Image (tube, rainbow, N blue to C red; front, side, top):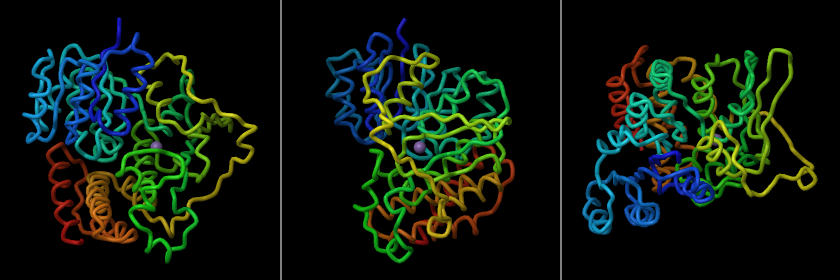
Length: 381
Ligand code: MN3
């Protein structure tokens, strides 16, 4: 029996790489649902190639273009946010890969868990914003959440077969493209510089988040929820070569690491195929070709995002939601060249200090915080 996969965000970086993985294992996987927000052109191409049961285009103004292009196919076409959130409940889906950008992943992920669909989680913002709610629901429903993020996949892989408590985890960070720049130089960097990541090829939003280290801050929060950790059990170390994808230290002091060349197809394939390791011909890592694996402490002064994220995680409640929403607006403004690189974190910091604290938010509280924070952040641009 093939595993029927729904890919939410199929036209993005993770989505397209997931389809490449499925191409390599077409005997094991079948594309059941594809969703995209804006890129109807690529969504149509993908639908014609993979013949899914259904596709959803988030932006409703593109609905007619998609239905026209697929009118001779036996493929259901839906449009809108609500449709993305509902399509995950489809009976025939065996696994949902959440690979959309930002906070939009929240409701579809909740619905997929409620419908008992195993989640391959690539949309880390879902856990940043509402980790407590999501993990609580997954626990209640007994639904596995398999991380796709390379660091969390590494930790997950280190934990397979272990029935032992974690002493701490060590998340590796490449340090981004501006690791060696002074604060003064950071103020001058352009959008183009920021989009030029040294090791990983990713979407625009996450590439900027990697340059500010907010991505790593989000990953600290993501790890807390995925592996049920206390803040002090999560350490970040800069490892510019991105070969060690992360590590787990156990109570006897032993450390397990997962290594490989930086290629998202590996963690995507691991999540889709779990618990099996599927044979691949991805390029192999050679120690001889990489004799220098180096490590350094992150610089919290030049990259305050890590500290903001840690603070937000410790405060909990709706504060990580404030962190995410303000960051989404700030990154968008930077990508539109309305603010400079350092102003992004100024906006996040101001929003964190101004938004009221809600200790035990429910889903509506999260939506409210998200909306208010976005409005506040826009006034600061
Ligand atoms: Mn990552």
